[in-house]
Image 1 (cartoon, rainbow, N blue to C red):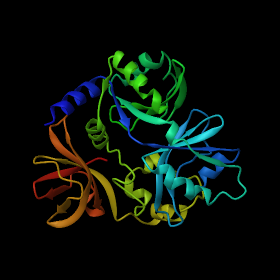
Image 2 (cartoon, rainbow, N blue to C red):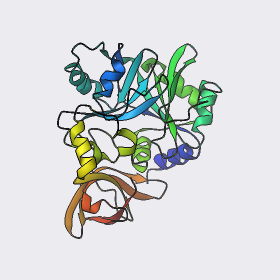
Image 3 (tube, rainbow, N blue to C red):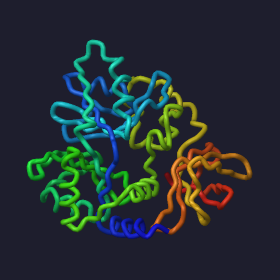
Image 4 (cartoon, rainbow, N blue to C red):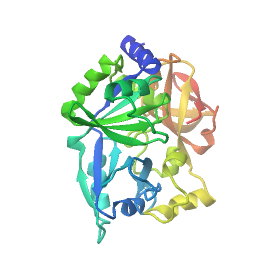
Length: 323
């Protein structure tokens, strides 16, 4: 057991932790047609968003496969799309090719914006202490957001329920990260590293593009239907495939979380067996401090995706838990 991770995890989950989301991307879409255009390019209902609201979505290709994944934040004059490293480079050319007469302008804001994740039982309290009382007031829905001033620096505060503890995304200029982290520490918050981020996201069943899924996958394979797919919004690029699967079929594989009872942490790529037959592979894994056992996100065949299904690898056994 990594003692540093154990200490950070205990302090962060019971209190409030802050980790850097390294090299995450931000795409800014402006222009009068931005909402309707993005609505037609992704799986969620973007046209319903009002300033201060947001949603999660998959951007699909003409065959319904996942091109990109991100979180959309609607502002007064633009919509920001936040995603993992490389999202801007992938997504902007894909969107640009479909802009014909629409009033839409795309800009890569990644160099100007860095993102951090705040989480833990006291995260809301520490966010308020850091950025001002009332900053999270009225954040009734996930991806609710507003921009606040921190000693002359603009910081975007976004409600994010993906950590199991609940939390917030914080966006600021790269030059302001040290100041944000300094304020966080002074407010009795905990600063954590990459291992803490991975442990919390895997425990929270938070899949990442390029790690747990990619362009070979269909949206329903990622187990984010309720959060990222609207089945009533009407046509969008790739919608026919997504709708047909929902109405008449099923995916042949999907992401699940597997809690292991013993053994070492299974490396990424480890083959999993169910009834001695190949059933899937590990896409992310960690040692989970809360239970002192390994846990993993895995892409498995549909027959092995039900809760409590036993899966084995060479060093131990585990079972599927709710994703």
